Image (cartoon, rainbow, N blue to C red):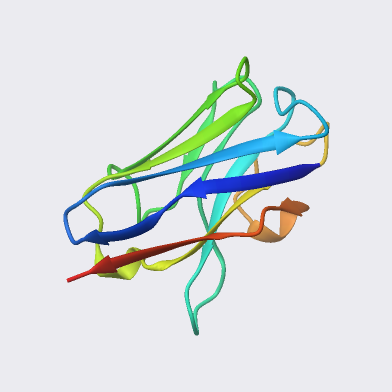
Amino acid sequence: VEVVESGGGLAQAGGSLRLSCAASGRTLSTLVMGWIRQAPGKERELVAAISWNGGNTYYADSVKGRFTISRDNAENAVTLQMNSLKPEDTAVYYCATRSPGHELASNPSEYQYWGQGSQVTVSS
């Protein structure tokens, strides 16, 4: 599974950014999708994930109430809307997916396929 992120960039604290993820080679409609971030010197963190039909979602405590993950299976795309951004949200954000047949998971290491990453920088 090959996934490609787009969006991200630079925002001021309190602002918003949107990340999108598209797939090539196969449909995403049966796959659990997640957004994982990694900041310099910090561990990888799964910030949000969504089940194949959108019925279940997961959010890290650090982003609850600020980030929203959604998917459009008809468009084969997943989106992460990031609002009320904080400087500590600065990181490289990766779109990731689990192998087919797996359920939603909160551990980043359980996501086997990652995109190339998109930088998000939030200034204070």
